[in-house]
Image (cartoon, rainbow, N blue to C red; front, side, top):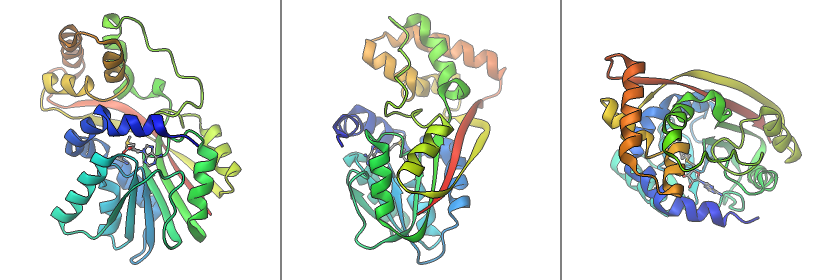
Length: 275
Ligand SMILES: C[S@@+](CC[C@H](N)C(=O)[O-])C[C@H]1O[C@@H](n2cnc3c(N)ncnc32)[C@H](O)[C@@H]1O
């Protein structure tokens, strides 16, 4: 299974952006960490692995609840930041730089969790089979993944607003291509988990408003050009940011009508299963 493309991506400029924006992203995505922790129900002393842990927000949340957490991530800069945050907060948690599709814990874990870190495997069935192999009997899986782009305004609205300045609209990736929306199809997620021998699969929607970072329209527009499908298309196509930013500021102004908060629809799946 070759995750080299994702490793290059998350160790390159994208990983640096996630490091730079870690605190703002954690604020934006906090509800999803809470939702995963709620279904994971970590008991003190339980061993847990956080797959694609990034800068470690979910790992630190579960460790704070008494679990023995190991965060695993393929991105060196994000693992480094996760370790720094654990030290700074005085929370005991381990972080490993590794490809979660082949990494195994030293001892079986009772819990495997993830916030948006499981949609990037080249071979998801093999990856989830490997994760299951590291579980204690009856171990629990709990993760959040995005529903399709079309129902996630936080990503769709910037892309549609910036579209006229792109040289071409990015083609939708073929179904199953690793990426943030690769688990949008709930039937596909069920198939991946049952093919990798997980049972008691439950998938519930999380649908609500998500507050985007930035204390005003300018800052929120900057964020929209930094992370998400518009940001990626702008980098790929070498697009001049100035007119895109002006269009985003205008669009945000129309939507927020004077409020400093930009709230956009977000939709995820909260997935549970048992080993
Ligand atoms: C969208 S970010 C989410 C990060 C973190 N879970 C959070 O919620 O802030 C996806 C993460 O998955 C990691 N990732 C992608 N493929 C991976 C793999 N094969 N093994 C481990 N981590 C991986 C990336 O490096 C990145 O940190």
